[in-house]
Length: 401
Ligand SMILES: Cc1ncc(COP(=O)(O)O)c(C=O)c1O
Image (tube, rainbow, N blue to C red):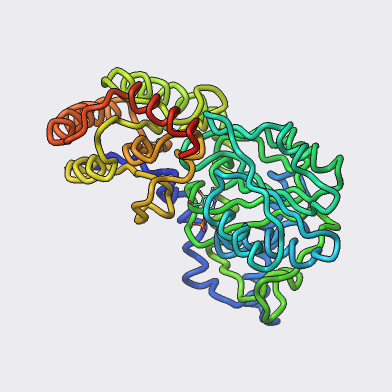
């Protein structure tokens, strides 16, 4: 059975060219970069070359790049690190209702530590209103974190505008750009961000590696203590192979960005348009300013999980809900934050495209999806049209349910 992989927002396949760069660091070049002998120096050089490559792409200095063990760790480091270091300046911090759990759970934790947290609403396509951010900032606000491109519904925020608002008010701004790196501007100087998270697993690199860009002068507290690596900000022996792989992967996605955007935007729009021909199907997220690889739709009266399992039997791999929490059967907090009822959220499916996908594969998948949706609807006790579900939800929201 041939496989069709629609789960690139969860993770991408490691590029062969990336793997080739990494392999020597599992073989002869296995030294600890903190050792003073030649084996250590060789490993240290590899890390510093990787740091240089990453900083060239992000348009920052080498000293502003911190290598970490994942996107989650970079987010935790930025949020806990900044809030705890700067708590004497103010206790108010801001994020949105559509963050990845690697961000939202940090804010929830900080609220237990005495911080006052504002979770900004988004509109029906997942966009944060600049005005809402402006209004939310208070005299005691110290930090804002807003996801660059949403992992579930693909909404790309105007990070430049949001970062500018924070800068004008003297508030530090972090963005989680894990899903954005392949397709969006990641020039930190141009964006005007203070901190930015990226990870290897979404850019055809290795899993278990991330970076935090931290602008010179932005002070944070470590979350890991030990040998003082990464300028004392992230202790622990560096994962040399993963760091080398991350830098190579970032270089490749940067070089191939324009081509991938063109190809995937066309395939994404074709896929969405064909899916919307299935009766009672709704697109989640915007048409414009959407990640070129993101398709997220809800099919009335079916459970996304059932469709996922039927597709899985055919070697078609997709996702319901968030990449990293897809074992959680609660309705997606992102799909509900854009105004959908739990029923519509439960019937949502995300198909995230990657660079190997073809139109032929999309056509094969469409055939199966259409059949399975029909089959599941025949078995379903529910028989609502998508409009009825939307109206039902609207009324319930108006009544404050
Ligand atoms: C937007 C976003 N942030 C953070 C993460 C977490 O990254 P990692 O799995 O490297 O910890 C993910 C992974 O799904 C993500 O999509």
